[in-house]
Image (cartoon, rainbow, N blue to C red; front, side):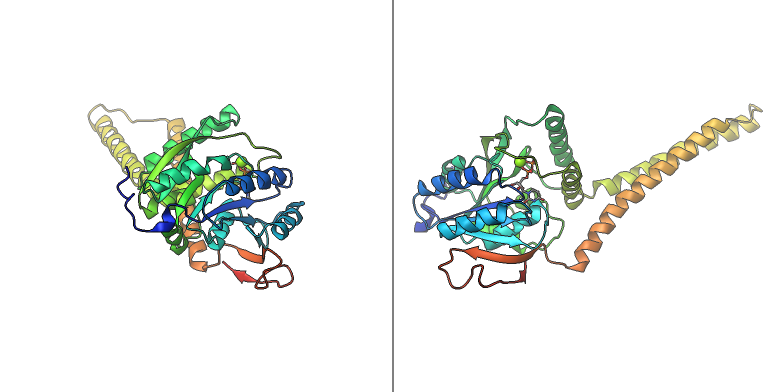
Amino acid sequence: MDALSDRPDPIEDHPRVSLAIPVYNEEEVLPELLARTRKVLDETPGGPHEIVFADDGSRDGTPELLAAAARQDPRIVVVRLSRNFGHQAAITAALDHASGDVVLVMDGDLQDPPEALPRFLDRHRQGFDVVYARRVGRREAWWLRAAYRLFYRLIAALADLRLPLDSGDFALLSRPVVDALRAAPEKNRYLRGLRTWVGFRQTGIEVPRAARAAGRSKYSLNKLLRLAFDGIFAFSVVPLRIATWLGFGAILVSSAYAAYALVARFFLDRSPQGFTALITAIVFLSGVQLVFLGVLGEYVGRIYREVKQRPHYVVERRLRNAGDPSSGSSRRRRDAG
Ligand code: UDP
Ligand code: MG
């Protein structure tokens, strides 16, 4: 396991850690989140460490709370996006602004416990570039847990990559991995898939998935489905192939039936009949065609979004300790990711 423990690089023992945290309307959780993450960093040797918050266009008290925290603590960096771009874009923004030797991506609702950082670092020290959390002990409703299980297994079966089961975005990434992720320009970002795609040495550790500390989930069913579709369509062309096989199947069945109809007409002197069967077959096959038109549409829509080359997100402003003259609320910076 410690094949790389003879690495000459001295900073690897105590790497500078960036926590990358997307937040969207998390005013209820923020005080506890700030307290716990800052405490964890206090106890982590080495440094200077930092906490990069990507504020995904929050409309509650989140921006003010983050600004106040950034004024107080020079380790806190706040990247405010110009509107709500979604979880994956917000993580991308946080990764783009993180400067550490390793980056721990975690949710802002404390479902990913920051206290697990030392365990991630231990594995990193053993030579792993990606240490992802395998979720055990989920606390969501049973039907949501069942849906997650089904989804992770479906995507593992469909995808061209070996995506690890039951792992979310909670992961420690080394600098080379972060740079590789940032170099991947694709717009429909399914980061846990991209993370697998980049390669390097990867391993999982079991981290209990806590319940959300406060507030409500910011993922609507709609957003959750979109993420699931991104996962499947960005990493698999199997849905397209299914259409081909279904088409062959339909041709085979209809040819067999045509052969039977000829035999029945000329040798058995019977004409096949059945209006209902005809309607059912036509409507069924039209349905199948429409579904696969939709599947095709998913891919075409994604191509459309890719060729437009829009940035993943737009930054409204970036805050770091008011004492730092190169940034801060007095000087609004507008750039695109
Ligand atoms: N989040 C975000 N933008 C969004 C939705 C969510 O930045 O459009 C953040 C949210 O603040 C949280 C994390 O992403 O820190 C995970 O979201 P949430 O906990 O609501 O999702 P769930 O855990 O319910 O799937
Ligand atoms: Mg959550």
